[in-house]
Image (cartoon, rainbow, N blue to C red; front, side, top):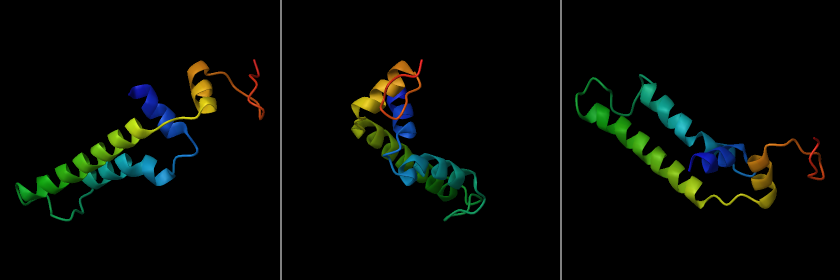
Length: 90
């Protein structure tokens, strides 16, 4: 799952907003401005937990459904730099 996640993040075909969902959820969690303020003991924490859980579920499902193309797989697996035609430059 870890290598597939890094392929997902590095793939230019994946829209940027899909890559940023997890980051935005963490920013919401850390932000002092919430839908329900954190000083309300239980409800304030539950909305943060709900946003983090929904974002984690979304990212896990996206990465599981992700099917890299053969050129993306080859680039990530061997790690060699390539030219425009896909030939290795080493």
